Length: 295
Ligand SMILES: Nc1ncnc2c1ncn2[C@@H]1O[C@H](COP(=O)(O)OP(=O)(O)OP(=O)(O)O)[C@@H](O)[C@H]1O
Ligand SMILES: [Mg+2]
Image 1 (cartoon, rainbow, N blue to C red):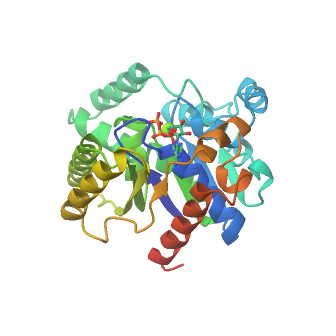
Image 2 (tube, rainbow, N blue to C red):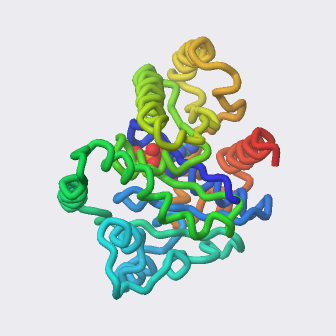
């Protein structure tokens, strides 16, 4: 069975996608793991970090993206034939064992989901919209990944900022969540807010089937040098007070221009500039994660 990890933070632009694609690529390239990346964000950043836009345009035209699988859970069509295996793109960036389930700019329609679940609750003897909604949230992504759980060592899901249905469903289907953050006061508040929401999610599912979910750790993305460095070290001191060593990774990721430039090449930095400081720390983090998981 694979280990399922969600990369989450309610705050935008903190490095979720960069972490997802570099962790996945390191696991496949340097540790020979079989890894599937799921892009759950309609910004399709993870997809375009691993895949050329013209290639993406071709598969989208053929409707071979996550949207197809979401539609199948939301409103199954008896004529639909494709499985998740048909939609997964194998060996992206030429790396054996690094597979991608491409995202889409149009993922699902909230109105259709609400209407359908409302209808379902009316059909039941006891009207309980909340219970039906919770159940749907619990199974949406689980149903999508279940057929390939035995085929991968790791399934890593790149969540969008905020706390939408797909993010909640991804967290509920995960064994672990990993939290990239910047050492800024608002980012730290964001971590605490997310932790509280996850606790609520856990409570909601307690009575049906308890979530098997743990925080893998918080990864800090640091700027070094300049006027910020003293300020950041003050904030990091607060982080040390607020979070236990088990909650934080020892490895931090430096801000490195090679990481940002890699996006232009549609290839993660661990592949296109492996000797850069950013790439080295992503590989070190991968090693720390494997050790934490006892692999
Ligand atoms: N270590 C780093 N060094 C330099 N640039 C970085 C680093 N990490 C991320 N970036 C850049 O910061 C920007 C935001 O990163 P990223 O897209 O990974 O964040 P995100 O949390 O996924 O954003 P969103 O919330 O919009 O999904 C990107 O332009 C990315 O290239
Ligand atoms: Mg992102």
